[in-house]
Amino acid sequence: MADRPFAIKRQPGFATIALICFVMLYAPIITLVVYSFNAGSSIAIWEGFSLRWYAAAWENELVQDAAIRSLVVAVCASLFATTLATMAALGTTRTRPYRGLTATYAMINQPLMVPEIVTAVALLIVFAVFKQTTGYDGLGLLILAHTAFCIPFAYLPIRARLEGMNLSLETAAADLYATPWMTFRRVTLPLMWPGILAGAMLAFVISLDDVVITEFVKSAGQETLPTYMLGQLRRVITPEINAISTALLAISILMVTIFFFLNRKKM
Amino acid sequence: MDNDEKTAIDVDGVSKIFGSGPDAVHALDDVSVAIRENEFFTLLGPSGCGKTTLLRLIAGFDHPTAGHIRLHGENIAHLPPYKRPVNTVFQNYALFPHMTVAQNIGFGLEMLGKPKREVAASVDEMLSLVQMRDLANRQTSQISGGQQQRVALARALAPHPKVLLLDEPLSALDLKLRKEMQIELKRLQSETGITFIFVTHDQEEALTMSNRIAVMSAGKILQIGTPREVYDHPAERFVADFIGETNFLTATLQDVEGSTATVTLPSGKPARASLPSGTHPDAGRQVSIVIRPEHVTLALPSHETSLTGRLEDIVYFGTDTHYRLRLADDTLFIARMQNRRDGEAAFDPGAEVGIVLADGAVQVLRD
Image (tube, rainbow over all chains, first blue to last red):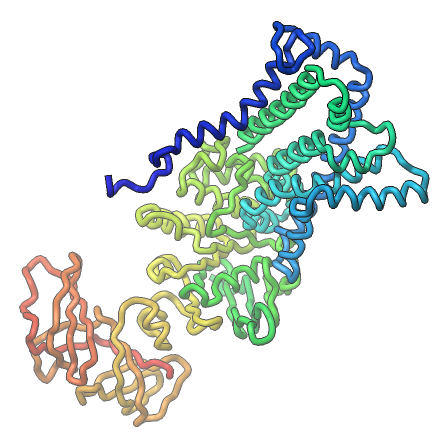
């Protein structure tokens, strides 16, 4: 067997380690999903199948309110973040390399490196001053904060897509009488579209489940789904939390699936 | 053919410098060339010689640091590529992957604002011209390399450009397909009557396809001429060396008469030689000469043989045989003779052999 190329799959213990990893990843999630269908009010003792906690969550006005707010923030923030990230990606891949390009990359990706709690505290201070001087404490601030930390998540897939795209396509379009605007509309944009979709969905999911920054930035009464759930945990834990989590999980899976099919069709 | 003499592209004193300061690269250094209408003109040279840079300047993807580029007398050096009636066939084809074959071909006309019906008719015509009618609605990823090449050609020809630029378009094809496309390109050029400017590093491609060739090296054009002129009468060592195999010798100039001269070969014997055009060197000077391997025949040493050498080895190539000889002054000399039906040549390695020069075999280089 000495002449066989190195294959990690054949190493002793590989299968065991892989199995442990998957169990660690999915066992808690599966448990969570299973107990969301519990008929009883415990999250650990199974008392039969029921959809009562889904019904309870659905009818709970606080959950409704938080869910709508979460969706509004996530849709707005992912739209803004994706637009800005698209422009940033174009600016960092469709120009001649310039001094400070690497620094620009680092600046755009900064929110990925800086601990979220630092950003949260910083935003808290800035927004507190802002709220005091202007008197505005609406949802716009939360959307602004979410947009800011979603930009790098939207940026990465878009930039990857643009970097994989041959520059000569745009040169060819210009050669064939397309003005810069037409080149962008007819060649660059359609080709980078899967990247933009991926970026938008990533931003959406990241915004949807953010706790730390939201908790620091939100004004009174601006609960999002995750902060509402966090608040609930301090009281009695019922499978209602499981039901809401499962719904969030379903949304994420749905998004990823839609993206997968959209992307495959484009290729 | 009056038409042939009109200039399509006039490159006048063009320089291109990339970067600045000590890192500056002089990609083109004061290049001038007039490319005629309806001509198949080739820019030939090794990679890095500036041929692609010159093409990109004509297309408008880059702008010259100095000099003018005129298209039918109009200076176009400052125009962006989308305002030049010049189209390019790219080395990697650069077909739009999100469009069908027909959409690719129609793109240029559409951008020019032609009505839909006219675009469709033109696409149809181009599809027949490159024999791709059946594949009009295919995605570009679903067709072979040779077919992609045809689509790239059709796409660049569809807007009827004044000049078509081809950037090593055949380099990605295998040998057989490349030969086919060479013939195809010549046919397209004569059918459309469009001026072709073709960039290649392949000397054989340049010789077989071009009306005229410009041989480039290190950002300069060394010689412009018909394939026969640059092959038979290379003016410089680089040209002689780059195009085909050749023998370099040193000789002494004797009598100079117009464009020819008598030179004394290293063996001491005289030979007639052509001088590079426009030069009038003085008699008595040492000059470099070139002799093509196929312009000589081997014979037993006698007063008719101009040079003699020891036969080192013989390489059989099917259609012809190469003989490597060591001359008296230790230089290597290669002779190439066509193989005939009537058996092998009567020389053995190690033998002293004489070299007979054909008429016009000796070319003096500009030093």
